[in-house]
Amino acid sequence: MSVRRELHTPSRTIMTPGPVEADPRVLRVMGTPVVGQFDPAFTNIMNETMAMLRELFQTENRWAYPIDGTSRAGIEAVLASVIEPGDSVLIPIYGRFGLLLTEIAERYGAKVLTMECEWGKVFDPEDIIQEIQQARPKIVAMVHGETSTGRIHPLREIGEACQAYDALFIVDAVATVGGCEIKVDDWKIDAAIGGTQKCLSVPSGMAPITYNDRVADIIAKRKKVERGIATQADSTRLSGNRPIISNYFDLSQLEDYWSERRLNHHTEATSMLYALREGVRLVLEEGLEERFERHRVHEQALQTGIKGMGLELFGDESCKMPVVTCVQIPEGIDGESVRNMLLTQFGIEIASSFGPLAGKIWRIGTMGYSCRKENVLFVLAGLEAVLLRHGAAIEAGKALQEVLHFYEETETKAVL
Ligand SMILES: *Cc1c(COP(=O)(O)O)cnc(C)c1O
Image (cartoon, rainbow, N blue to C red):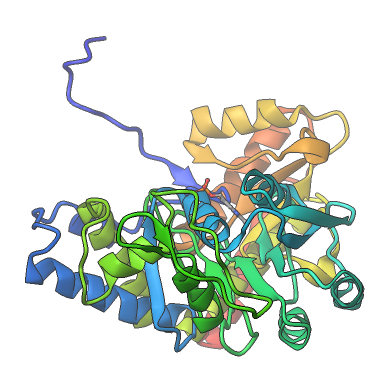
């Protein structure tokens, strides 16, 4: 095989919790010619994207813009700009991405206090609130939709408690934004980080973030005045006084770039910004409520099929994430062999999981552009065929008939 051969990628049906299939309209705008980053034509696209991101996050925040880098770049930018060494950060962990928050917060010198619950469940918000009352952390950071376990966490009460006890509430909404309801202002979230390659159906490589004035005030106080002189600290508890350690993730510099000042920081990732703008535009064109409903309908269809095959879902049903369905790998079946056959024979990708769940569950995503009827039917048909091939005791064809029936019923109710 010659490397000089033109790039070729296979055709795939991606039913993982990300990256998912990019919307063809997103891929199309990525081929749009590059314009300079200070060209008014481009700064106008920046402004349009910020305005649409506010709608996406359901916020009036002044600051809503993307960080160049994958989703964790957005998480790191927010944490790096807010955490000063010695700050206390409470992190309730219910899966892998809570561990990521911990790891990043610790690197920036935070005194991290964690709470943990069994993977597959979420916390009783009251337990978290009690911990906030007792520990009085400066920051509470947690994940909204934990893709590793397929659980979604209620946030509203925690946001209210954070405000009452003067803590900042930082939320990883990477996997939920554009697929599940997330109301930044209403739920009193001080900073939220979204992802592109999950429910927005944009390739990986950018992380939209938003934050309010409580966060912006800290950032402003940590700003280096021109070259290297820190501003005076003031006496309020949430004030910052030490300059932000990172250059790339210094949100005060990024504000200067994304505001009318247009001060140079990095070179904006032109084609990714086109892609993000189109991805968010498509979400808003579909309508937030309509889009969340579409995700719920296909989730229902997928669950009908999984149960119809006699497979069991993993995790507490009451906090199931609508865009990720976790399935227990049946006794005696090699989960990796099934995934492999799905990929090689059908071109379908589903995911395994991490840590305590490795080898125990498959995770099937229904996110963004991947969340379509033909994809749901195809993954179920493929899974059934492959499981039969692996000797599973399944009544062939029954599940798919039930799913077709479900779709017919739903379509007559004119939901789709
Ligand atoms: C995917 C994911 C991330 C990490 O995203 P990267 O783009 O890989 O950096 C963080 N948090 C959650 C909840 C995710 O699902």
